[in-house]
Image (cartoon, rainbow, N blue to C red):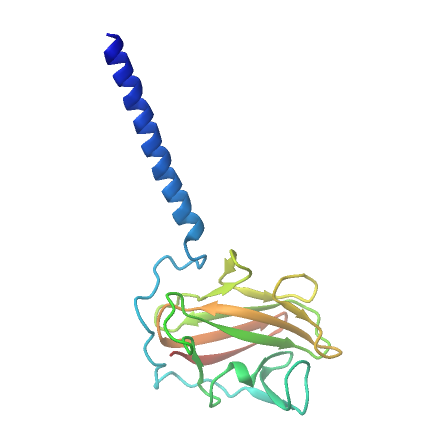
Length: 204
């Protein structure tokens, strides 16, 4: 009887150790998993950007001989009061083109877009990037662990992406955006009383 009791205790301890190990592995996977909300990483390089995306109305262009931290002259595209510096967009005007894997394969393709809001505008601006084929919104990074499908540029709120005031009357943000497939995407920019929209051919 004593031998059986010892064997039972040993069995229970062994099971407990195995369960703890499994929990530890699950916790490790949860912690080390890529923080992107996309649960399925892409298996290889994205396809090239489509060449037949729908056209969209042309955006306005602002030219500066010097602005903030940019070296030399720079152009902004968009509509007042929300702009994207040309270096963060590909060539052409309609549709725009963005390379999400310019440095090679990554399981969660992303790119950086800098936003300039101004001059003298202080209300929140909302940004979405929608896949035209599926309607699914892309994900924007807020920090290393938080993501959103609507990126908000709010001069009244502090965030890690807030770059402050590059020039008097202007406000600047950096953003990271993720996509899972090459395609045609609609960039929607809205603020109280106004908006603009443009088509982006995304791929690599």
